[in-house]
Image 1 (cartoon, helix red, strand yellow):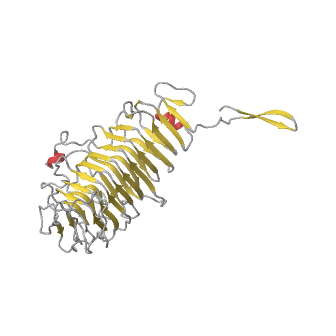
Image 2 (image 1 turned 120 degrees about the horizontal axis):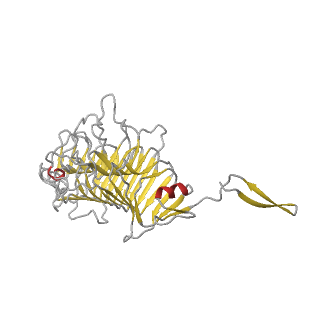
Image 3 (image 1 turned 180 degrees about the horizontal axis):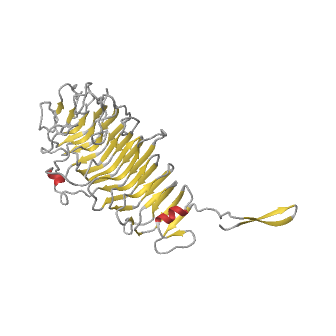
Length: 423
């Protein structure tokens, strides 16, 4: 370390005091330039992260950075390139996590392009506070198995503290296409990477807003409670553009449920709480995949809103039942173990439910109270039908469930309008 010299005065006499082993002032910002290095300049992003003060800014000049990154302090990591000269992070050898966040302090990642070939793109585990803004995340030849584009898991959570993830104004591509993986569309002997572009699990507060998400091998957005089926998980899913969500488990484009076979039992009740609002999103299935059973599956948590979404042609005639859900643009509750899954309590209003097969809204047998499903546009000014299957405008009520309140209904599209209603 370089000694710090300080000039001091004692009663008119000057003296020089030497403080050994004390560095000069830290670096509130560091420039990363792959072509040069010098005082305050780093050649790699990881070097820049190590050099900068906690809470500082790492500014990355255009180039392709062949490195995986670990962020263990509060900072802002920002691309300083232009669209014609991007900052690309492209780790070699397909590491399990391309950009890993390990600090509880706030981390902002802005403007980068990430090409990752392993299971996880940007991932935080435990108590983290991550914001991903204006970032492009693309899976490259994703491996078979479960992977994520941008994800946070705070599970288990012995400290009781909450994690945060915000993803906004970004593009996330799971790269599961029907051309590369035909079974993603046909549903015949399905085998393809189960990528979830945006995923959270456990005690997390999620905001995912104004993103474009494409070509998933799982749900495009998945919100899961802790594996012990307790804790609190909240999400605001707002104004996103989702298409070609090919869930390997035949779930929804947006899936709010425990993972896999993680179901409650008589001795292991579902105690998880939370509010998930799904508002203003556009959800499509332009690849006409048979794998998407629902546009939105809302299976856990007691409160929230599904409002002002346009769910267009998501459910195809070839879609079929899963253990938990049946084909519908919007599915509420659980088909499986309905006596053990508490009913969900959401409002379903001002949505345009257009061009879906089999059902527009479908409620599971555990939905024993009438939810508010008024003022939706069912692609027909006469409102929804209630006469069964293979009608995309149908409200289908499973045996034992309460019929939703669906009158009045909208007589023209409403999802993008400003219309309100008086209760």
